[in-house]
Image 1 (spheres, helix red, strand yellow):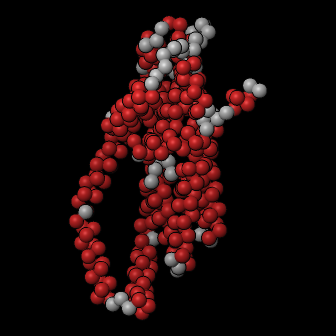
Image 2: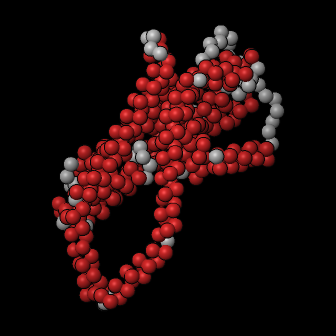
Image 3: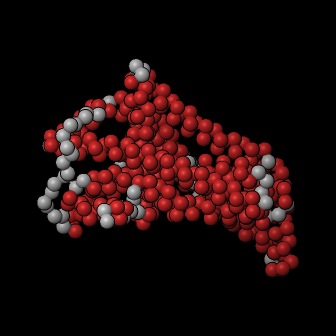
Length: 362
C-alpha cells in the first residue's frame, strides 16, 4: 500500500440526496448483488481472506521470502484448515453410517409401535396407514426430479465457489499494489490519505470480525455441550464442539453434525425423546447464535449496533443465502468506516454506530 504523509481529508459533499434517489440506489444495489452473486460471493470471500492474510504475507516478505511463495504458503494454510473442517464433516457422516444398521432396526421398531398405537387408540387400520404412506411417497416422487435438479445446481455452484476463492485470493494478494493504486486514482490527490486510512482500518475490522467469529464458535460449543450434558447424551463436549465447528458450513454442517448424537442417544436409551432432545438443543442454540450471540459478539468488535447487525444478517440471507449472512457483516463495517469520514453521511454513521463515541466525548 502507498504510504501518505498528508493528513487525511474527510470526504466533503454539500449535495443532499432525496429519498427517491436513496431508494433507487438501494434497489439498484440489491439487484446487482442478487443477480451477480455467482461472481460476487467467491470474490467477497476472497477479499475477506486476502485482508486477513495480507499482514502475514507482508511479514513473510520482510523476512526475504519470495512474494509468490509467501502468498502460496498462506493460501495453502487456509486450504488445509478448510480441508480439516470438511474432513471432520465427512468423519461425522461416516460414523453415522456405521451406526445405521442399529439405527434402522430402532426406526423399524418405532414405526411398528406407532402403527399399533394409531390402530388401538385412533382406530386407524393398517390398510389406511399403508394407503396414506403410499400416497405421500407418490406425491414426493413427483417432486423428486425438481429436488435433484436443484441439489445438483447448488452443489455445482458451491464447487465453483470453492475452486475460485483460492484463485481470487492469490491474485488479489499478488496484485494488491496495483489494485490500491487504481483505487487511489479514483479520488482527488488530497483524499489519498483518507483512502489509505480506510484500507488500513478495513484490515483491522476484518481481523476483529474473525475474532468475533471465534468467540461465537466457543460460546456455541459450550451451549451445545451443556445442553447435551443436561439431557444425558454420551460425550456431550465432543459432540457439542464438533457441531459448533461444523456450523462454519451453513445449514449442512449442523444437520450432519447432529446425526451422530441423535443416533447414539437413540441406541443408548432406546427412547425417541432423547433424539428429540438433541434436535431441540441444537435448534435453540442455533436460534440464539443467529439472532443474539452472533450479532452481539461480532457487532461489539466492529463497533456496530446489534439492531443493524440483525437487519444486515437477514438482508444478506435474502440476497445471498447463507453466504450473505456471513459476508454482509464485514461489508457494513466498511460502509461505517466511509460514513465516519464523510460529513454528508453523518446520520448514517450515527445509525450504524454503537453509541460509544458519543459516550467517550462527554
